[in-house]
Image (cartoon, rainbow over all chains, first blue to last red):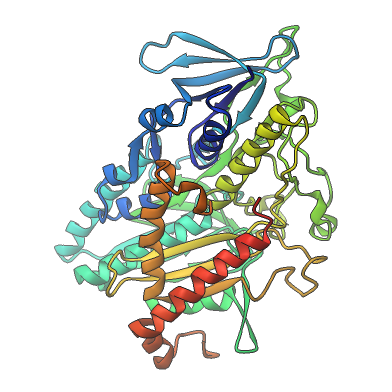
Amino acid sequence: MAKVVVIGAGFAGHTAALYLGSKIGRKHEVTVISNRDVFGYVPSWVWVGVGHMKPEKTVFKLKPVYDKMNVKFVHAAAKEIHPDAGDQYVLGNEVGTDKEVRLDYDYLVVAPGPLLNFAGTPGLGPENGFTHSICSLPHAIKTRDAYLALCDRMGKGEKVKIVIGTGHPGATCQGAAFEYIVNVHKDLVKKGLRDKADILWLSNEPAMGDFGVNGVQIKRNGHVIKSKEFLTSVFNDHGIRYQVQTGVTKIEEGKIHWQNYEGEEGTTDFDFSMLIPQFKGQPFKYIDKNGEDITSKLTNPAGFLLVDGKYGLPYPELAQTPEAWPAQYQNPTYKNMFAAGIAFAPPGPISKPFTNKNNLAIAPAPPRTGMVSGVIGRVVALNIVDLIEKGEMTHREPMTDMVAACIASMGDSLWDGNAVVIVMHPVVPDRKKFPNEFGRDLFTSHLEMGVSGAWMKFMLHHTFIWKFKARPGWTIIPE
Amino acid sequence: MNTSQEFSKAEKFWMNFKLYQLWRFIVLNVKILIAVYQSKRS
């Protein structure tokens, strides 16, 4: 009987656990270790952050789902991985008791989600800083409370400054910040308070609508439409000011310090700010059989696990080398160890990186959340099933093949709500497979705004919660 | 989208015209399914 351990129960880890449980859970031992005992549907935390959705509607208990799927659940925070053959195990501390737990494994999936590196920007974040975040449910709740208090002030006639975007020169997940800013706009319009707020988009993207993926391009009625023009139109239409090519370097109370591409240093005042932090790998230690810490040999400097990608290529070469992107997310040193979701080290950025004259790198990291995480979780799980049952892997899905959809809602009403729908295929441009300027399939890629997007967002919330609860038919719903 | 980078009145009309949006909803779902199929879902 093989033992499979999955660290983490987010989009990647939970998806992997469901596939592993359904395929081999009866014959083999599948265990999930997570420091949270609930699954959180992250995309809907945007709505929590403006008070449009109750927090409890975005989470559900993991254990009943795992019981149904023949998966064991250990509510503990992993702290060490011992990967050497003969004695492979994960060490963690049980949540609540702090008791040490040990999980032996034959196959390991590392999918713990990101470490929200608020410390990477002095003054950033809701705990030790002055800004807000929607990257965790407690943060989204705190953001909601601060936002509603701000609305009260506006209701009394006060004019305020709202800044939303990225809080680190290397931050990713601009899509979440974009969705939050347009939801705030829509909510203020509905409350009759929009004229009381000056709203600014502050981002490290090289251009509007870049999203860390070199923008999105589609072909419609014979014309190429780019996300840069499209998103600029959205912001112009909504009266949202924007400032891109900007890396936030420090936050003080009511003041954001930044540098831009030109190397200029400046400040922006705010009354309320939601800025996405840099994402790093979780601070596990990888310990070899001699007790030596080998973490730096297995991870990149940001703490993400190295997998089957080609690392170290300069950006111009990487942009022309789609095969540099990993396809099976398998660690090259320890072949029974896989990384899923944001935990894997990308071979480099998707968007063109930039370093200003002050040597500050302003470059969005590649997004690996949501749909990408789920797909990788599935591929990794199916390959582990392959290895156990056939001895060889048969599944591959690099980000140069992968499709990803991002629905940025503006309000949650199905009648007068709205959303920008972005579908990119592939996520990482492949100029060999799609020999156009953008390296993407311009037919299946999609960029549109309308009420249908609000329907799509509503449908996704419910179908994905259905899927993640492993209800009947869950496997036919794409990740 | 017009060249002044603002949505035109016609574009805003179509964004809220429910019958057209139903068509776009169907198109979007079909596109996602095609793209998922093409991305070697296995």
